[in-house]
Picture 1 (spheres, rainbow, N blue to C red):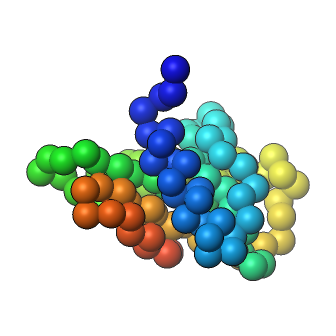
Picture 2 (picture 1 turned 90 degrees about the vertical axis):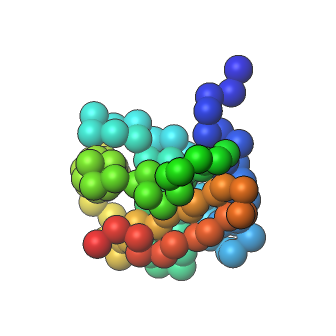
Length: 110
């Protein structure tokens, strides 16, 4: 049985591969939280949060709360530490998927 969001994550991964990214890991679990996709965009390590909504008053972008942003950043720090602290630039992207389609927001977290 697929977990909710898996189809959206598959769609996001396909989108990133189409842009020439390399998928490093998916559904990375740390004590701080989960990272949906870890990818390389050239020499930049990209932590990707995937948010999808079928419909409703809240857009996928609005569903990325400040709490979720903090957890994602903490999970990314744990991931880098466990990987030996790679010397790469890093950024956080958001891929939002809803009835209007897929939107890729680079550098979505400050």
